[in-house]
Amino acid sequence: MNMNSLMIITDQRRVGGMLNAVKALGGPITAAVVGPRSLADTVSAWGFERVLCLEPAQGVPAEAYSAQVAEVAAAIAPRLLLASDAASSRMLLAAAAAKLNANVIGAVRALSVDGDAIVISRSTADDKVLEDIEAAGSVAGIFSGADVDVITTQPVSVEQIAADSSTNMRLIGVVESEGGNGMLTAARVVGVGAGLAAKDDLKLIEELAAAARAEIGCSLPVCEDLRWLSEHRVIGSSHSQVSPELYIALGISGQPQHMTGVRDAKIVVAINNDPEARVFKFCNYGIIGDLYKIVPALISAFKNMNG
Amino acid sequence: MKVVVIFKWCRNPQDALVGASGNVDWPGVKMSANDDDPAVMDIAKVLAGDDEIVALTIGDGDIAWAAARGAASTVVVTDALTDVNSTATGAVLAAAIKRIEDVGVVIIGDSAWDYGIVSAFVGQLGWPAMAAVTSAELDQGSLHVTCKMGGVSHVLEIKTPVVLAVMATQTEQSEPSMKQVLMARKKPVEKITIADLGFSPNFAEVTSLRTRFPDTPPAILYDGADPASACKQLMAALHNDGVL
Image (cartoon, rainbow over all chains, first blue to last red; front, side):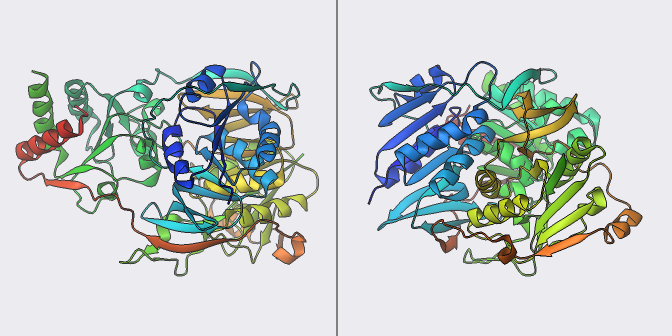
C-alpha cells in the first residue's frame, strides 16, 4: 500500500515532531515549503525524500498560494497530507485536502499503520484523552503534537516552484507588538495568573524573573480583567505562544486558552494552592502550596544556583 | 455584500465526560459558542454596515445566539452534528453557505476546539481564506484584514469573496440584554436538513477505534508545606532535565 506523505511547511515550528510522526508510516516523505528559500534549504537536510519550495512574492502571504499548493498535492497524490497548527499552514492544507478528497483531522499527535489503513491518534476531550481513528482513504492531518529535535542528513536538492503571479491578497502593513516581545525567544518564562492577590505583588514576580533570568508573561485575565500587565505579555492561543526551555506558572489555573500557549515549552512547572487546579494535569512538575511562600523560596534557590 | 457568520458549530471539549478507562461521553451536551464566536459577531457588524448579517449554525444549540448579537436571520442545519469526521461537518457548512446568495464574507471562529472543521470547511467552500484574524474593516470598498502572525500583526488587503477565521483577543465585552435575547427569538429562522443541501460526500470513511489516556507520565507534585524543601527537590529535578 502506498504510504507516501506530503508535509506543508510555512515555518520550522513542529516540523521535527511531524517528521517523527510520519516516519511511522514508512513511505517517502515530501516537503512542500511555502516560505523563504532559506527555510527550504534548512529543511532539505532533515531527511525528506524531496523538498519543493514555493517562495511567495514580496508582500504576498503564503495563503495566497493555496490553489497552487493544492495542484502540487494533486500531482504528488499523497496518502497523508500533514501540516502544523500554524494559521497559514492550516489554510494551505485546507485547499489541498479538498483537492485530494482527503479527510481532515485536527489535533493529530501520532500516526501508525494497520494493514492498509492509517491510524491517527488525536487529542480530544480537552486534551484529557487520545482518540485512535482509522482512515481507509487519504488523510489530511493538522499536527499539534510535541516538537522534537531533527537529526540533519546530507541535503537533497531543493526543487523551486515558480509562484503564481495572480493574487487576491497582499500585505499592506505590519504592526509590531507594543513593547517588543522577548517571551517568544526566551529560554525561561515566568507566567503569572489571577492567583496573585494584588498588583503590588508583581514586584515579587519581577524578583523571581530576575533571579531565574526569565521573561514575564501572564494569563488573559491578568491583562484583560485586572489590567496589571499589557497585552503583549499575554500567553495563550489567541496571543503569544511561547517555547521556552522552562515555563513556571504561578497562580494560573490552567485554562485551555492559556495552556495552548505553552504547549511547546520543554518543561512546565506549576505552583498553585489548589490541588485540583487543571494546570497540574498539564505540567511536568508542580508545587502545591501558597505562592507567597513558595516564590521567595524559589528566588533563594535560583540565587544560590547563580552563586 | 452579505456577511455570513458561522456560530455554534462544535461542542465544548470541556463538557466531555471522561470515564476511568478513558472512554468519552457527551451526555446532553449541545453545540456551544466558542471563545471566538463573540469576536466573529463584532467583526461581522463592522463589515456588514447597513447590509444584513446571516447566521449559520448546525445541530441543537441555541439558534437565537447570533440573532441576539445582530444577525438579521439564522439558518440551521438541524441534523448535522460534529463527530469524528471533521470533513463531513465542513462539507455541510460549505454546502449551506452556497445556498445563500450574494455572500461576500464568511466569518467563523478560528477555534482550537476543532481546527479540523475550520480547515475542512475552508477547503470544501474553495474560497480564499485567512486564519488568526483579529480585526477587519472596509476602507473605501477594500477589505483590510489584520492577522496575528507570531509576535507581529499583518494587515492585508483581500478581495472578496473570502473566509475569515477569527481569533478573539478578549472575552465578550457586552453580552446582549434580555430584551435583545427576546427580540432575537422573533427574527427569521430557516430550518433545513442535510438532505436539503443536495450534496453527496465523496471522501472515504473514518472510524473511531478507541479513546485512551495518553502515555505521558503524570506530573511530579511536591508538597509546598515546606517551601524550601519543595523548591530544593524541584531545582534538582530541573537540573536533571537540563533546563537550568
